[in-house]
Length: 281
Ligand SMILES: CC[C@@H](NC(=O)c1cc2[nH]nc(NC(=O)c3ccc(N4CCN(C)CC4)cc3)c2s1)c1ccccc1
Image (cartoon, rainbow, N blue to C red):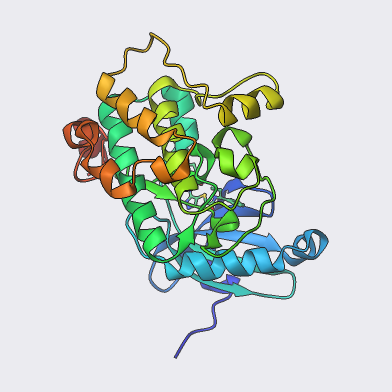
């Protein structure tokens, strides 16, 4: 029978992160010793921001997904004041911190992450789920250095037509800014943004003023700096994703067949250096 979980089933460990509506703690399930991440969301906050339907959709969507590059939502429970999501623990933390620390990734690492994300998004799209908020802050790395899409707070079933602009605007596709009906292809656009940011260290349309960023996005004002030196195949893939007409963007399947991906992506999805693996063994 489905066991009713509660906080007393877990030993709560250190605080590992937070977002707008909750805090995440490392935890260990007492019976199995299994290490998880508990995302604790206070109901008072939900009431205040009228966030129930949002959270319900996040839970229903993330719980229905089971893919190596999508962070698992194992189960959830609530008590008087909190809703708690029991999530997969990603032991190497937030991708954006690793990216900022590294400055930019090698083509092998970037291609491996892009291939993993394309696979995860193809899986999500097959399940009629559009994430719509794929950005480095929502990407985590597990102990093997495999990328995990987290935080489905802004995900939607394909028929959703909500247009509230959310979070960082660097990743918004033109059709979301121009409030046109957007479809799965927004995630393909975002993959182009991410690929550029993995290789150059910052997103392609960044500008000091938000309006300038929005203008550069709708104009697809794409330029490739001369440093760091990036292969022409990588630029070719990015140029085929950052296309204004969403119907002309490279499909997720074609991304995985692109020469730059074939040549550089690690099939295992993991790029950590061998010596690091020995350390953890
Ligand atoms: C993606 C945002 C989202 N986060 C989750 O759902 C999250 C779910 C989940 N599972 N595992 C995590 N791991 C970590 O957060 C983490 C962070 C740093 C770590 N290290 C620091 C550097 N060190 C060298 C290695 C260890 C290790 C693990 C997170 S975050 C969220 C959304 C709303 C509210 C709270 C959190």
